[in-house]
Length: 318
Length: 79
Image 1: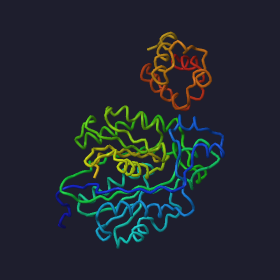
Image 2 (image 1 turned 180 degrees about the horizontal axis):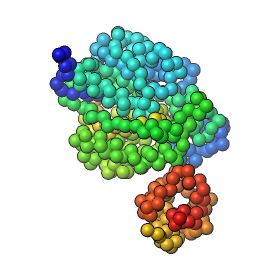
Image 3 (image 1 turned 60 degrees about the vertical axis):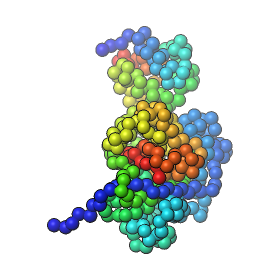
Image 4 (image 1 turned 135 degrees about the vertical axis):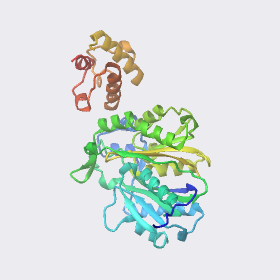
């Protein structure tokens, strides 16, 4: 039979990077467009301001910017990367895929390149795939990116959604290593509830707020706890919890149920908004940049969104 | 197992205090969640989930919009 490619050792996150568009949109800016106000937005979703892409920002360009930073921080050169995966659910053109274009723009020659759509769980799914490919010997160094331009899919006259969503990208380099710094991914889906988050009229993001709130705040902590258990990490050993930045009340509710009161909880949504698959790597990169996540920290990530889909794993900070 | 109106009211008072910090004595049957108790749609979900745990009666999301007052919830749970 054929030889198996698996290599001893594990996979680690070697570096991260992020990109945010320069345009800041505050709650006051939105008050001028729709019937809402700062107090309402902050109390319901926890956002003070968000970044919205300009015409120069595309899913691909933001992915290149974030990916380029992660690549630069990795100490590797482009030729070391053999796999590029882009998680996105907001790209305008499905053909060609985004990953190959991004790879070419970064000078990465002929890597395996594909996109995935796992909505707001996209980064955790991609990280799970990349880590397993590295551990199986299919890749040595993978560049993974979550990049989203949600503003293209928002009805800017709908106050229930336009205050939530934003744009940005986050990336990580996943490499083979003697030790293992990425725990097993725990993932799942609930397609019978697909209608809870979908595109209204094939154009505009829409969600059943109460149903999504109930799902996320009553079920998902179990996925987080399972990821901890699979990684052999006790909740009290966690340095931080970095979930998808969907809504501050969802984040805080899940965090409370994890039983890890010492863990720092990512609240990147306050100034970044909900950027779907970009939100976790964006939060990680910004928190590392501020010195909040020292090297070697143990962090639980948890992504969840349209599908419904969800995924979690434990990672070690590079 | 049926719960008395008084039991449910007392239970709701505790649940609402836990979730939004309102004094249980403020939670009386005629009060409107939105207008009198300043409870928003997401807190209503939390109240429904807590009430389900406590009284064993599921309050689905579709139902929540019709439960405007404390009495509405008491009646729903008793039914």
